Image (cartoon, rainbow, N blue to C red; front, side, top):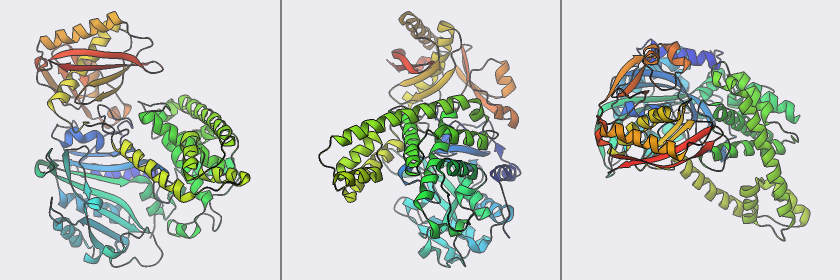
Length: 604
C-alpha cells in the first residue's frame, strides 16, 4: 500500500535511518565548488568529499550521511521530460574505508522495502558487466539475489551504465549497482536485462563501490582505502513513493501553480492530478514548457542564493546561470506570458525551500533583483534579434540556429517569422547545429580545467598552503573584512576571491607578497586538528561557520601554519612552508561587486 510522504519527511527519514547505522550527518556543501576548477558546480554529494575518499580523515568519522544540493548542466537542453532536473537534492551515505558492498546493498534494500515500503515485485537492479579493466560484479548480484531480487531482475550493464569515475583524469573509481522502480501500469516485466531501457523503469538510487584508482597511464589498480558512495535523487523518490508526476510533488507543485496563474494555461488537461505512471499518455508541449520554467528558475534561485552565489555573465557559472534564466523566459513566451515573471516564480521557490535552505530567504532581494535584471536584458536581446531578422534575405537551418544562439530565438519563433516572409527553415540542419552546440556545452560543464579536489599533486598541495598564507596576509595588510568568497586552484596557479570594497593598491600587494614569502622562508610547520565549531571559533580560525555545523554538533578540520595562520580546510597541505618556494602575485582585479580576485603562483 502506498504511503504519502513529503520532501521534508524523506530528508528526515533518510538521515535518521543512517544515523542509526552509525553515520554522522554532515551539512550540504555550497553549489559553487571551493578549490576545485574541474567542474562548474557541485554535481553530487561525493564531490566535496573527494579529499576524504582519497584518505584524508574526516571530522565526522568513517560513516557519513547528507542531503546535498546539486546542479548538473549536461542535459539542460533536454530538461522537460518526467524524470530529469538541472537542480536536485541528493540523499547520500558514505563509507570512508569502513563497510563495503555487503552492508551498503543490505541497507539500500532495507530502506527501500521497509522504510519506504516499496513492493519488491516492482524493484530491479543493474550491476557492472565487466571488461578488460575490471571483472563482472558477481558479488553485488549475489547479494541482491540473497535479499530476494530475482536473478531475472538483475541486469549486467557496461561501464557506460554501471561505473563511476574518476572525477578527473585520474583518481578513485569503481563499479556501481543501480536500483530501479517500475512506474508503469500492471505487472513489471520479469526480464530486466531485456527491459531496462524502458522509461517506465525509473532509477532512484545508486551505490558506487570505489575499489580502484585510475592511474596517469590509464590503468586501474586496487585502492588501499575502499569506499562506498551512494546517491538517491530526492525528487524522483518522493514522486515514486507517492505515485506522482515529479513536478507535482509537494515542493514543485506550488511552482507549477504559479506558472499556471501567470500563463492562464493548465499543466494537465486530461485527468487532473495524474499519477506518475500515467504521464506518458498525456504529454503536451504546455507541460514541457512549464517543467522547463520551473526547473530552470528553481536552479537559478539556488545558484543566486548560494552562500558563494554568482550572478549572470558570459563565462563559467555565470554563463550557465544566464542560459537557465533566458531559456525559462523563452518558454514563458511560448506559453503566452508577456510581462516579466521570473522574480514571481523565484519568490515561490524561496517560499518552498527557504526553511530547509535559509540562505535563500536571506538572499531573496539579490535573487529577485538579478532575475528581473537578466529578464530585462534578454528582452533587449530579443528586440535586437528581431531587427537582425528584418534585414535577412533568406533563412535556413544554420541561420535559425545563429538566431537561437545569439538572440535566444526558439526555432518555433524563427519558423513563424519565416513563414510570414515566405522563407523555409530546414529543421534537420537546425537540429544538426544544435547537437554540435550540446556537445560543446557538455564538454564545458563536465570540466573546464585539469586538476580539482582529486588532484593532490605536489604543485597543488603547495598552492593550497600558499592560499592560507595569502588569506592571512591580506587581513594583516589591507585590514577590514577580508572574507573568502571563493578559491580555485590548479597545478599552475591559485585564484583567491575575497570581499573588499576597493581595489588593493600596488604597494599593499607588494607588502602582501613579501609577507607570504617571509612566512615561506621561516619554514613554518603545517599541522591540523579536529575541533568543534566552538573550539575553532575560540581559537580564531578563519572559515565559514555554517549554522548546520552547530546544529549537527560536528567537528571541523582546522589547519595551522605555525602560529601565523589558522583556517578550516579539507587539505591537501605541505608539512612545512619551506618547500613552497617563491610566492608571486600575478594580478589583482575585480571579480564582481564588492569582490576582488588575486591570481598567484609559486616556484623556484
